Image (cartoon, rainbow over all chains, first blue to last red; front, side, top):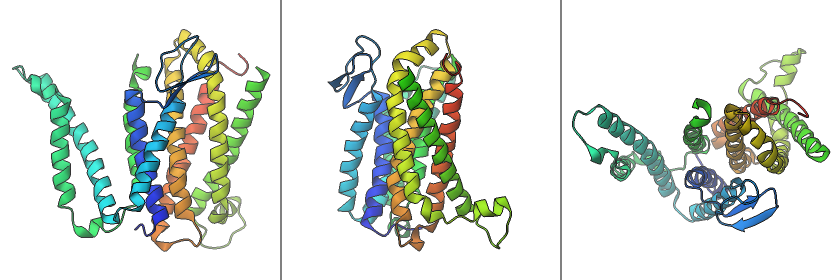
Length: 173
Length: 156
């Protein structure tokens, strides 16, 4: 199962990039615009509610659209093997961060002495990045010749899992 | 109110059409007919998958736009009522639907690329996977939409 043309490269990178940027936008609230449905007004970037609730979803869609389009355009002029390595690195770093940070918090909770440094997100992120870089650098060349089309559903599932996790308070309160 | 209700009904009808199209395509792709048969199930599985591609893309896009439009009214009317009634699970389900709809939309360009004619043998597996993924997203969104819409009953 291999990607063989620029249209596929563009669309695969667009989907992968959009899923990741969209998840980041919702987590850190980075909308390109804010819509106020009661008054019908639109503000640039994130603005607090006024005269009723504010809607950021449309803004997140636009932010992710711009970011993903730029990434996809870059992908069309980047060697395919580097795109595959790049996506592999990104996925490994994201999964690695989740694992390392979860283990660090688990150890912190169970430890009988104060290990404050384990609560650092940066430490977990750096560890995950180093491990992901090493693994993606040493993956067999045959794995990196083409961009794997399966990223198109694997990365969105990962993004959906992260988004779902942040919605758990709705179901546990 | 009549306008928003009409919009919601049209959104729902388009979703039904999309559900039928993507289910037909996914079943035909994952469970193809090996021998001719006159049964309903066999005929359901025997449809030409390729002919559904543009219908699915257009139906998804139009259903998404209508849903995004109805969403404005939901946000300042229905959701506020649901929150006041402490229907937090219902609100949470709608948030899931919002994200799922987005995820399905962003898969469409790749779906189109994999289904572009002439069909590439390199993408045979990718076509099956992305079609199934899209079918799961559409089904999940359809069911969530029903549950959320029924939380307070039609016209309540």
